[in-house]
Image (tube, rainbow, N blue to C red; front, side):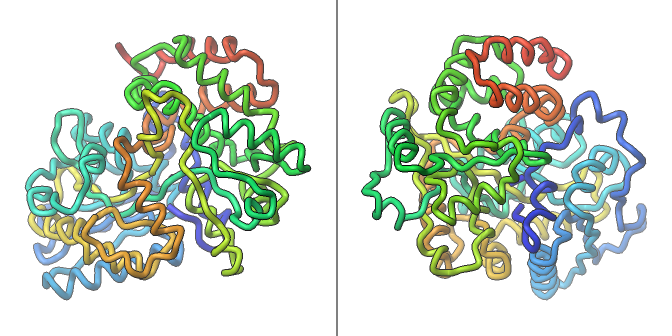
Length: 437
């Protein structure tokens, strides 16, 4: 996250985490007239002004970004003119926006989505900015911030992990042990089912079908490793590869323990069943915490990394969507914009942002995390321990391919989980439409 929903949850979540159909695939040319437009002027733009295109339209991120721009203005003497557009509109319009006269700096996502614009030369390299901020970031974060040409194009601000969440008191009451390996995970699910619980909370009805992708990503990462997973996401290997078949085989082993009626339930309702101790576990992101209003329940929530399937890969990959900033291809105030990005990539900026929005994690390792709650602290440790960081299926792949091919196929398969070969053949038959050799 896609980016936490604030109040209400449902209002922002689809825009943040939902797969946006066709943005970089076949649907790109069919986008409607752009709603997202630059707020700056032309060649004679004020050298004391930096324009900023933001997707943080909800109250919390909007306030957090306002705090950042105010602090930067005070330190630099420059003025940041912010152009705020709702998250979903921002994503749907950005391709046309960047080909026009975009703002100097704009919010976006790490990984493939950043690399797409870098490859199309719709953004500016930031190696000189990273020369100044690089000491604060891990190698895995640096990997997510580079284009295919090895240059930096992205400055990260925050991230959040996906994991397997549960209530500590339920595990204590029932004598459950946290599983580390796949066999232990399945055995625990079986025991929970015997105990009258829905072992794995699940809700992917309506616009929430995106929520199944977190489980798919982890199953593939644990079964086949990071390199194969990324090759599959980037269209470089066949979806009928025996390794992809093995991923669905493991998933099919788990499906009898999914919450009944998941296809007609929202992710929020599924999460609530976990909070109510009607379900035992949930494969979900840290944004689960936004569903909680009772601090006693918040203190009772914990998580464990998705279990190991193959010891060759262990648990070394963590799914942690990362959000941050990029520089447009012809910024009106390049020097001022780079100063702004240096500020945004610093520990102080992240501390300011998290002070307003504590539902995410600072990415800069030098940021003060003293105010983190227990879940944030453990989440930060999980991400810091990762050898590889994946984003999310639609962020690591062509979103059009995910939304129009992969997601419908996997959702239909979950309704009647067979050996998966037919589903994978259908997905593979469409791969060449979105990826070239």
